[in-house]
Image (tube, one colour):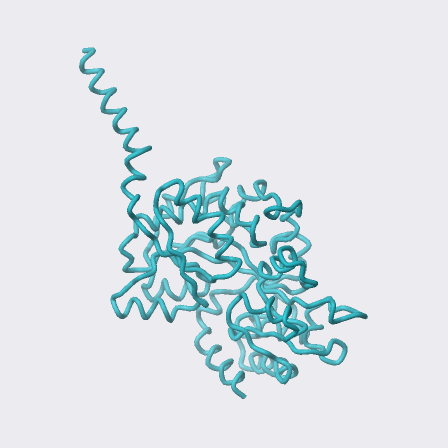
Length: 366
């Protein structure tokens, strides 16, 4: 009897050892390619997610950069040479790519609960959990300006971006129509909750482009998220659209005289997805489960001001790394920053993106 009990205990002990020691070893020779947006955002992910994940599992992370969209993912899929494992995507690309079969279907039941024990399906913000991707942060498109270029009255609202008379100077504008069309309508007097209703009509789209026409001669276009703060720093523009996190990093790390206009910010989620055809699906899923955990999501805010997608992460948010600057008020999800905000309608963009990109490309080339 004792021998039988000893055998059962030994088997149980071996099982536990395999969980705690052998399972990570099974991934020890793995290398994942995680593709993100580069610059300060990727650096934040490296510190908050990549390094701790490698330390915990032994899985190495190869970091790759891109400028968004699905073109490179489609090309890999069509060639049969998939080199990316996990990709950081805007929500409209997640939805479109999922419909195209470009991403693996995820087991949402395997996502761990929050650090406070809240089940994942109750801990994540609405829309953050999707069969093809898990929301990893909340970001915002904002307008930023160099306060040193405005010695008198300073811009304070979205409409000022389109006011060349009172606030002269070049404007930076993203080459992607998303946010530009919404901003054009809101600057033209459309209430945030009516934007997509108006944009769903030909007259509404025409109205947005007509508003953009009023600043076209003063526009300098940007593609990568690192460009707007550099354009401001170089004096190439005095105001620009930008990702909020890039501007805050320039304010804190480089002591730049930049200001964020939160009026009519457009916020959305980014998601981690696994590219269909990845040879490392299991390891990729382990990375996603870890990176979207309560603590890594909160830790991301130490290096960039993108908000966590889990409620359990909020109490864990502290200060910007190496400073005493409290990060909670700097996030897109801070109540004061949401007063006139608009949540990007990613379903609308998934349905209309190709058409809007074509028209916007023609407009840029005029």
